[in-house]
Image (tube, rainbow, N blue to C red; front, top):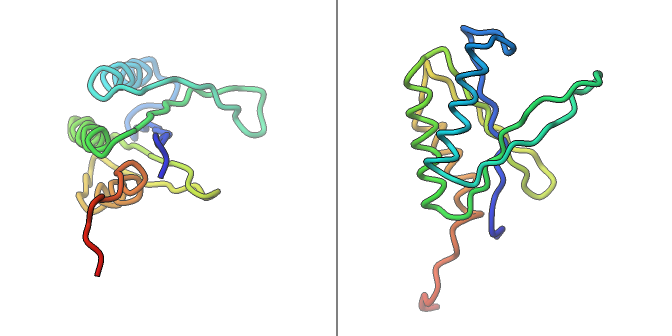
Length: 133
């Protein structure tokens, strides 16, 4: 079990180009609200493959099941405000990258449950004091 799981969160939009100032304002607000409501947010710059450019990445450190629940509810509310929005949430586990796509058009609780299930086991301590057979 990891003390914290780092989620890489990528907001997307069908309506706006990635460099559109209106979209950049929405992403900035997303990042600020996520930091305020959930905490554990930092910004990292990631190289863009095949170019000399960098892209800002939102990284969210989740250290408890409660923090994960707050993050998932935040994601759901943000997506429901505009059905052209999307989020790609990814994390590393045992050398494997896990990725979940969330869309505003289909904020699906089963997809959110995959996120909770995939990350939740890593941030929730195992039960203690259970009696054996």
